[in-house]
Image (tube, rainbow, N blue to C red; front, side, top):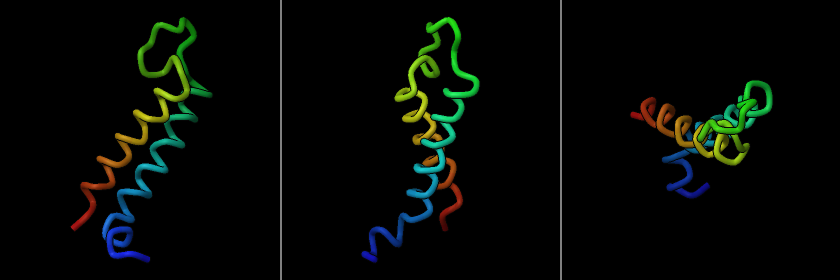
Length: 62
């Protein structure tokens, strides 16, 4: 593993987990009217989840 990957492994895991969580939120909760800016499309919801997951897991780094 490269040192950059090792150094940011926790953030990468957070991004992946957040993207999956965002997609699952869109699939099971979503937006019935289609006017919600984040949850109306799976891509928007997944990207938002990835950003939030990356930020959350980056707080856990030393």
